[in-house]
Length: 522
Image 1 (cartoon, rainbow, N blue to C red):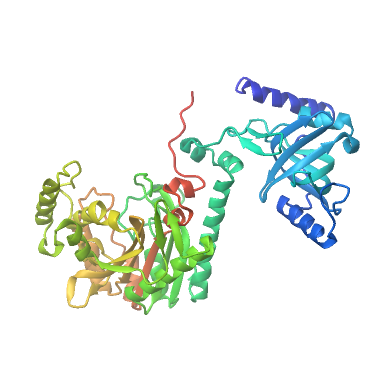
Image 2: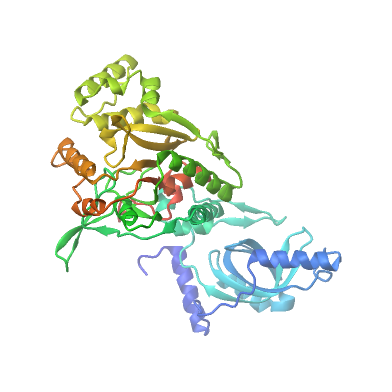
């Protein structure tokens, strides 16, 4: 027991004492009949039906219940004791009295039970003089002994029955590292992840209702593709080959269009071996769909409808509070051409700078004029990466209300179809909200010869050792050569939309188990 602290050693001793008395601190079965919410609802319904005064236990309707939950507060008062337990539905008070339990049993409860323990209690519901619906306990048992006190384990019941939390689990590093404790003591965190689950359900329902077919594509892939990102690399021993965790679903989903599945989508994990920030995590949840015979304008309309639908299902409204902003997701969203947007905020017309060198010099000139010399792009950057720099540093932070930025340079969109009559601009949009990118979509390229040429261009534009270099995918080209219908494609980070709809400003807050450095041991 050398690794346990003094409080844990006391609780371990209690476990030994319980077992010595023939009581199992971790029994196999529970016999709950009601959640806390169900018990309260049944009692209120019985109150209403009986139309009797409900000020005392004697006059209250008889609603029997067996509850189970974690003890969050305890208060011993001689012949009686009060406790609050919490289950997945909320909190409820327990009332223990020697008349029903004997003094020995009440003393046993006060001595052997601790805050954090899971308890099962059976009895009759009543309303106290202060109006609180409570379980009058006739029997109780231990369901699981808590060895380690929870980090925020100081809910104290006052004389008037109110509960004061003297210690809250607020440290963001500890909360992310011990999400189980965070969930146990912070009801608002549990609500965040319920909303996240509701979001995924809403997205799935919307697409299902629009005749999209949900599919699953490989996570382990012999080639990575569909985005410019550094992959995670692993090795398959039996096949004796390196494999990659997918960075995108795109190239596999579009293969399905070749197979005449006209509307397909997938919600799942992507993996990118990149930095961590308030909006980036190495593994994240992505939604992608591909829609045969549609273009980026139709996808744009479907996107705003889908996100507005999800917002309403999760929050009850298309108007959502995010920090100091009130965002309105009701269609139509603002449309802004990318070239015009960059020119508006920087004065640089990217069309007038067809080479990386020319654009780099224009960016330096703008930064110097503004006195913003602290961060400059890499002089070796491709023209596409320089455009990304302008977008991220200048334009993106201004896009607060839901906005579609559309018509992108071909340099940074190797899988999108060019605008008719303008081979250097492609039919692509990105959706922005709250100053960051939410989604990305194209009129997808379906010409196999053009696609092969784009792959070759990508290979030339990126240095040989650039880990974001898009590899040539011969099997994907073979699929395209069988014939791919014209189509619109879409991708969205579900985590980012969850951030917006739950008013959380770090992706860690909407991931149950975010990526963290290995904890240093003392």
